Length: 377
Image 1 (cartoon, rainbow, N blue to C red):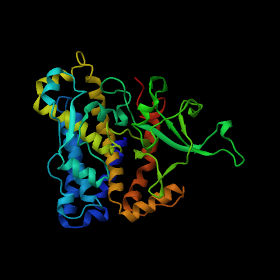
Image 2 (image 1 turned 180 degrees about the vertical axis):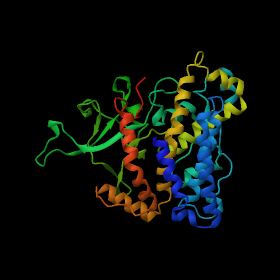
Image 3 (image 1 turned 60 degrees about the vertical axis):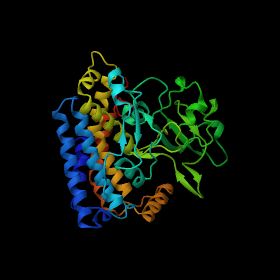
Image 4 (image 1 turned 135 degrees about the vertical axis):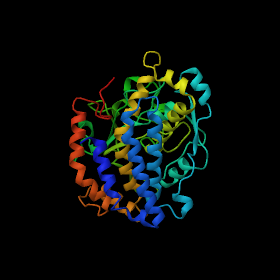
């Protein structure tokens, strides 16, 4: 069973054991189930079409997953919140980018209303009102690390792990202290630490970054504080859970918080689907591996979308269906490293396939990149 198949099996089970938040009305419940069915059909159909049309199927599959998420959102109150309308995003420079044959610098911008903006609110995420180049959104997707879009500098998600600091210089009377270990930084490629760090305010709130003695024995950067950061009067965990891993995502240029990864995928797939639909001749040239340097990264990301997005949607449903009280309870349990189990049906269902998924992921990572699960370029 692939990672995607395991996620779809659990998502299908949710259609008879819906989150309580999706049962607020018959219309909301029906939307949750119908959108999930359509999303799965779109995703299941993608292997049977070429890259010429694949982004269209993937984007509309993700769009239907967005409707599923909105129907399950605890923050949604009333039809105006959970009933998505329009894409809510646009690519104003699409024709020029298509004509040039290079799409990395193509701007992507939300419209201030519509599905993209609505989902951002429900997912507690910022949006991109000032716009962002496609390459910035693209490279913020973990699976894109080994096949990035555009030129340097590149800001990728970084793996975050809290553990004891083994460096002898940090050993104290009470043993080794706890610290945050950040891996995935190409240290030899960072020429300006401050410019790099400012894109990760979750890790370096002061923007100063790290010093030479902050580099650990395996090339990871050590942040000498506990696994959380004291903010707004409480200890908050660093990073975002992404397919079982805790990652720190870069903010978009001029932003102060990273986009939710669902929105990064949304922006990337929407942009590619628009090119495929409205600039088909130019799109065929862009995906020509004999002539376009962007063709292989596009192929790679589209293949990863089919495998990763179902599991990401499953995680997002769990997150978005939590009330503020449940969210606070989970935060405390994680922070205290307890073994208590969440009683929600989503968590219980995920545990049924959890061991199978972990085994599959472990097999895929054998001899591959620790962060992405893909072979290095």
